[in-house]
Length: 388
Image (tube, rainbow, N blue to C red; front, side, top):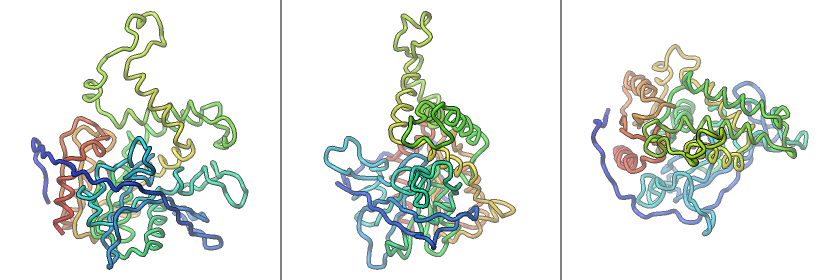
């Protein structure tokens, strides 16, 4: 096991190597009567999966890096969809020629998860049996269900082996499940700011967010499509969630106690601190791009995930992993998935004799560190990929 000592701060220049213009593709399977049987025994189909790929699949069809996204991200992990795009994909700094997920070497795949609202079947999709959006009639889905859907995509693409399944946050849970469900084709996994389960604090925070959504006057039992959307509730839920991605040190540095209207601070209740304006901006921006039902369903999938399910302990469960090597990274300021949760995984893997690299990275950025500390991650992940 390799563990970085605190105080080491490697710097790497990210080579200019964008994947350029990309496009989202779609694959549909589980057509009736061959529907997918979910964890809870219900059936779902047809299922459409939105995905993007970068790089070229080799002749052996095994040079694959499978990137798993977090709660509200999508399949667009790198590049731009057109030349006018203001921003590239959500993990663009890690994907491309010469970058950590080097598309000169690897075929990188990212798919939108089951239950989301970015092209893969979810609550906002139309149920072909009723001609109406599923809404709250959509079945409860799990992390395991999401991975099984991805496996169908991988088979469709003709992939025979996966070099590494990589995931940050909720994506790390998917990576663990890949190694448990399909140990014979997963060579390694990389878990970044993640955990083997959702801690009680996270579940509690999710509960407050869900309550904000369902108490919105426009909620209508989740059947709000074609009507006024529960914008206020979803914005509040996002503000609550966004706080968990940050850290008090960074908030002091970025906002402190700065106020946008200090002269009226003691006169008007609606005058705001800069941090309040920031959260409101994040909430309003979010409701324009995400579905309230999907937010509830995906949060629930995180809540109920437990890598030790049906086993006496996490150590017993992870004994099924056959990976050549595992990468684990936590961040010192992350309080959504604190360092202790990564260490629980490390201890369970170590007890099973699994070769691994573990880094507890000193960062001020909270949970968002897994997106912001790309320079250190590039150093460590490049070394990891080259070690086996």
